[in-house]
Length: 244
Image 1 (cartoon, rainbow, N blue to C red):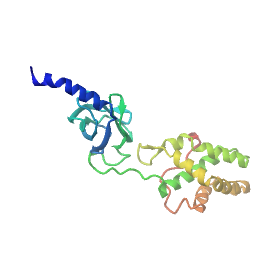
Image 2 (cartoon, rainbow, N blue to C red):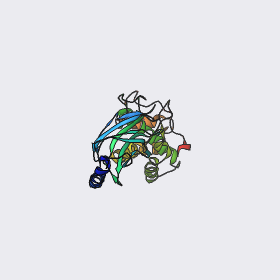
Image 3 (cartoon, rainbow, N blue to C red):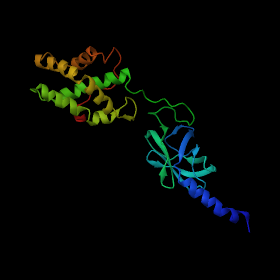
Image 4 (cartoon, one colour):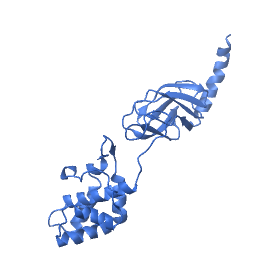
């Protein structure tokens, strides 16, 4: 009788036993690559399957292809799927219906740095000085654009709270690119930490009627609150009422 047939019951037993333990991903190489996909990464860890059909690999919402176990239980290879504009995603290996821990991976493109696998990805900075200034000024612009001419303090407050949920912040277009960045979180952080001071400053100028809509107020308010320094504003035109 062939040796493989003799060993088959043992292999099946080992497979079932290992399948009871959750898969674990320790590393992915390379950990960045173009979002066009089509290249192979190596995933190492534990309980990553014995046969090629034991596990599936997902990069964010997309399934990898050509999954091959290269070292039983400990290492497999997978071809990265196409995932346009996915950016930073979680890689999860599922074996026998049990999901592994999530490991970060960056689908690079013009928004997320180099488009060659293995290169260091240059992720856009989050909550940087320039970004904070842009969020602050756009928030003031949108608040004033949404408020009625004879609004109350409460009306301004409502307009400011709603501004963070507009398309302008949820799909903020990085100047000179086709990259959309979600700045709604940054907007809500600003409202949550400095919203009252922003409102007080806007309201004092609004009541006085001293040229509050001439473009000076957003810069003045954000500079006074130390959210903007000279040259800090990202090169993006003020939002229009169409963004509301």
